[in-house]
Length: 334
Image (cartoon, rainbow, N blue to C red; front, side):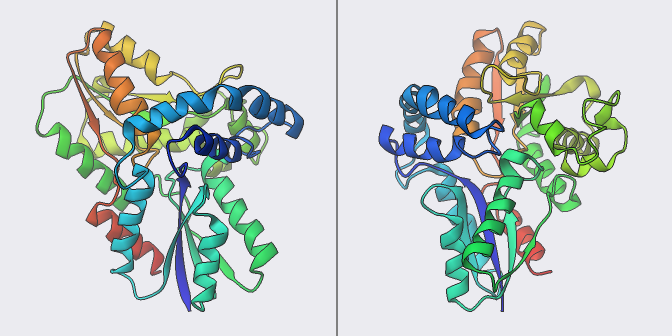
């Protein structure tokens, strides 16, 4: 029997500082999130970050928390419910971090007699800190606890035509109703060091001029190349003028070079340059979460308006859209 395991990022169990600290500890101690030596990571996370950030993050989570719980978890479960009705085989939902663990997802399918599992990391683009860490965690769990299971992983779908169609449809539902000066594509940021580590050729990323636009085997694992391609596919399909869009990268940690331009800086720049009516979309996420609802929809709007902007429209993620559920069911049924 075959089955589907959908895996998203995860969330704290509640907005309490204790639960947020526990979640951040697991998340930030992942060597693929902070790609440093164990002891450097231990000191940074245990001694510095976990003594300051949980309180701030808990406050942020409270701003976006729903009555049913974490938006990311609630929306993921709604999507899961729709997919279970579209396919004729068992489906399980797991999170890379938090209590809805990958182990539990695999065990749920194993208990139902599933032997061949299609794993769908809910990340459109390849990155060490998202797609790769999910895949490697699944491999570790299977090797340790479920060696009899066979795993097939859905590859990053950043340039999948049907995914791009859905993304365009979502953006069009916003821009068809309003006047806008500019569309900002805000992707989750990652350290530049991650791009270099992920380059299997060891000779392309940030070593070749205009590396993202020069074909290379490295592009299969290059987050920056993939997000830029997603943008180009969208603006081509929607026929958006080259002067009416740009890319930026949100979320970062200090003391290391991350992908630029930073979203908060770009919001200020655009407003000051006369782009008064902004639309912002976050294609690195398929599910609304803290980074989209608080950082972009709330904080980003405040930053843009304070810098002189006049209107700000956030395009929601695909979330539990019916067409998104149908597309996933087709991918998993191959």
